[in-house]
Length: 112
Image (cartoon, rainbow, N blue to C red):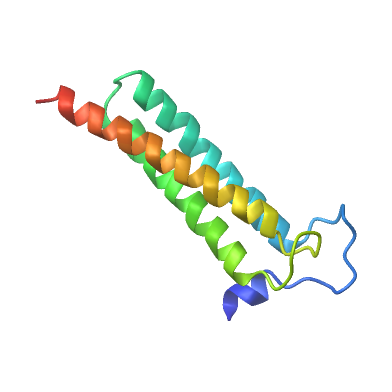
């Protein structure tokens, strides 16, 4: 119920208006991108587990927030609920989780 209140939009939304749903989906995309970049760096360079753990947290947060935006959307694309950005954030966040998981597996195999 609280999530729907945070994502509520006015009935007449312009395509260029920054609604709360669109803002939350942009935040989720940014978190997911941080997860992808740090996860890729952790996978490319074995710099330790810290970067991979931060990438995992950022990617997971992006995926969760994107999923919440999608779940709370009451309309389709163009309605201002941020459903398209939520789907993109969900996918980007999952890629960040996958990359960071591979980086964690690689760093733990090198430490043995």
